[in-house]
Image 1 (tube, rainbow, N blue to C red):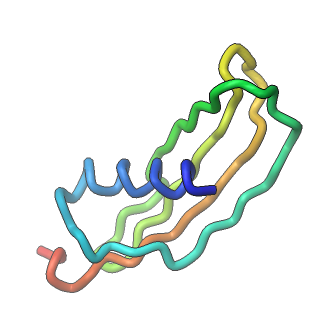
Image 2 (image 1 turned 45 degrees about the vertical axis):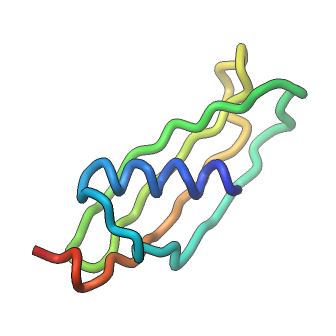
Image 3 (image 1 turned 135 degrees about the horizontal axis):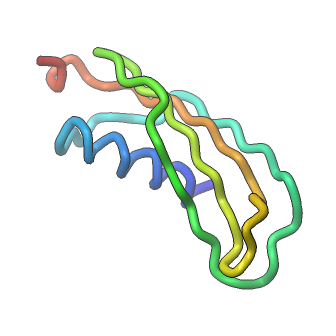
Length: 84
C-alpha cells in the first residue's frame, strides 16, 4: 500500500509541482492474485485532477508477470495554497 500511495503522490507532484501538504484522503486496494516473491512494479496515472482533489489509480505487478497483482485507487487533497 505504501508503494501505491507513493506512486500516486509522485504522479500528482509531477503535474502540479512540489506541494508538501498534499495528503491522502482515501485509498482502496484490491488484491487480485498472489505476487511472486520478487520486486513489485507500480504504474500510476491520474484519473482526475481538480482544484482541491486528485484521483489516481495504480496497477501493481510482480517483475516478469504481466497479470496485475493489485489495483489501487487513491484520492489526494490539494491544499488551497497550491490552487492557482
